[in-house]
Image 1 (cartoon, helix red, strand yellow):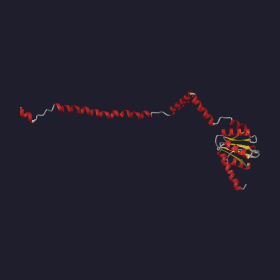
Image 2 (cartoon, helix red, strand yellow):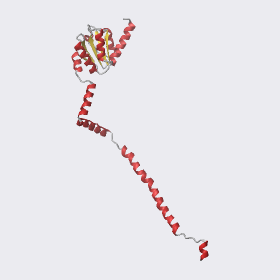
Image 3 (spheres, one colour):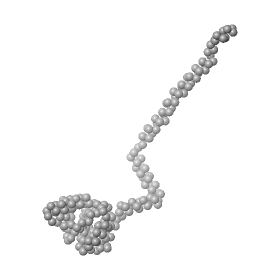
Image 4 (cartoon, helix red, strand yellow):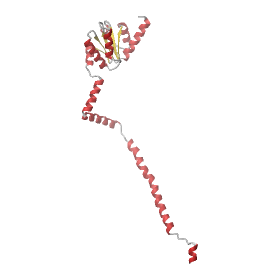
Length: 214
């Protein structure tokens, strides 16, 4: 491999190490091209599975700040850079290895720490995020009591952290406004009514016709 190609390969591997949520190193010797494609499909689009050169991988891991032990880079290596759910990817790799014993899992890196093949299998036995959410949704649907406790806990938390005087402050002026505006209307009616009556009853002015009759 020419030097520029090596530099580009190391840079790509370094970025993969930095952006992966988990990394699994495997030995693929004996697997066919068809089997490798099947494994990539099983791992999904969020996982990049590539055959690598151990010398370049060692340099890239060091550049990314990842500590890889020497035994992980012994023999032909292929690395799964997991950028999605590590548990789901570990399950896929476990299931594939059961059907294809030629895939040997050497170990890997999870949450910045080295993990053994046994620890990776323990990770695969955990419930994935999607499964846990589905179970939670089922529990809430099947048990009103559980859902009520969750709602009560959320309500208590909101009340403890967010007092709500703004509701009363906004509502008070709305109730006072009609009273203040209605008062002048009532006063106008009471003031004008007596004047109308006195003008009709107490002002009998003499006309020219009445003076002639007298």
